[in-house]
Image (cartoon, rainbow, N blue to C red):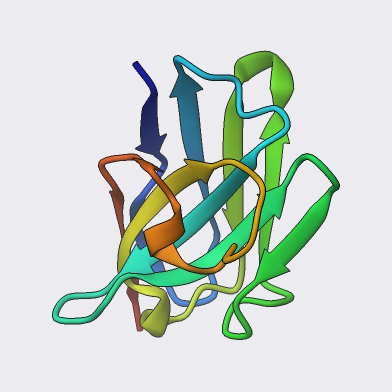
Length: 124
């Protein structure tokens, strides 16, 4: 059974940093796609970042480019999202997701595996 467990969320002031973690079990995802999405209250879940570890392709939403970085620790089967220069508009529940390589990297519907989410709140 595949499980994704996020951690690292919290309350931070604007301009601060957080690092989210996503620990995977039941599948290594070493040559798969791992992504991060976020959902603010009353809004749809939207793409934040993803990396296709089969070829190294990395994707970021325009709103987070230059501020967020996706990475992984293979030994721990854990994916990270380093978030710097946080803004109040980054406030949301952040979800980790996994899938096999293929089209539609930024589409939440293409990801069959999801974590439970972790809350990130950025105060102004």
